[in-house]
Length: 491
Image 1 (cartoon, rainbow, N blue to C red):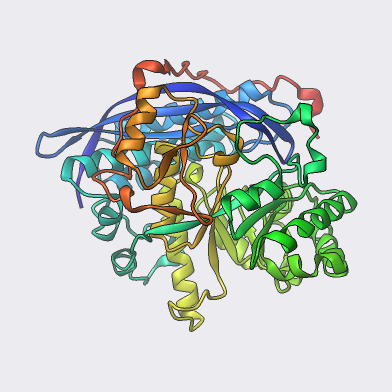
Image 2 (spheres, rainbow, N blue to C red; image 1 turned 45 degrees about the vertical axis):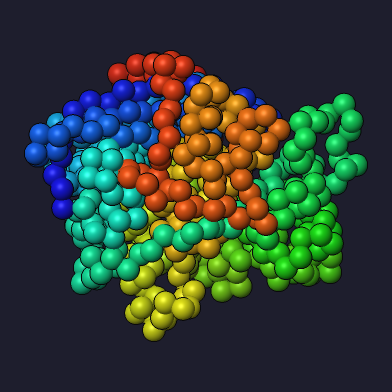
């Protein structure tokens, strides 16, 4: 274990324009903002090192309350980052995991005082922890997989995870091995055109990349697809039938997941959708292909009632409900069997939840060759090409996940948001992951998969350099609780 001290953090932002509108849940996104941080740590031997991390500042996902504007949602995330920086620096000398675990309770409590829901409060540590590990790996010449396997971060069982008592966490970490490649699970958003007839000539982007689902299947040749549903059973069924027609015809031996994005009020609603899907002949193959259903119920009630009746038919995953370290055990008690890994929720949360799954499956008599009763899925909040997507890929591949949701390759025009010299450096440093196609550098997807070999570099999966001079400083976060701009919209 290595002790270090967080010396300074520089925070930047840059704008991102989407090539296609992306609708999920209650929002349609056409442009966004990426947060980028550069953290300096001091090691006990006097060496200083710098690490980086990046994540989208996403409106209406972390906090979906309609009472806040999108701009206020971004300020909430900036508050969470500012708070984490303050707490980590005040902690002084610690292991990387010690900085996270030692400030976790206060981060959540002070976040709550600011009116931040747990997912928002977790955003700050999620960014900081990645940048700190990146700095440590660069200093010691260790890649992410080796840092975790050797546990140089000092990950341990604490009072935050009492359910892991007695579990051999060091052995679990030592047994983790990064996959050389991972399959892409392509996201089909609620606005995405399915067939050519859904895209009028005047609506096409015409940038050489696929726009309809038909074109996506032919271009990327993916085997996995994540299908958004919107909470209206009739509309969802109609759209799923149209999606199934394309996948059945062109996608080979495909697999799907359903993402409810909290659009159903209760388990009865999503159970009715599943029942109707099973009764629809045109969906028979899609139903058989469905691996799990992700967060279909609004988080306000998702963890209030048992879901066993549905989960026995199809496994259920929590995503937005996974706000705290205690959320997954609470979900398990209600009948959920899966939890998502998402970089914006925190890398240590993903690792600890993966350990929980290993412990549960071992107790159930499952060996490593079995998927077991409990599982983790790899999800995405538009991880952009570059630092963001690489650190996420390194994490989920190390945890042994065979496929990962990716949406940035489709809805964002590659690395068009970054200056040319930054794009060129990522192409040089990670030629297996990127290619120069249709102008900007973009993910190199072959037969529906991404090659990950170049991520085994010193630090946290990034051998290229970001152009910080082309970014703007992050605005200062508001100091106090943000008053809702639209209080009349409160439920």
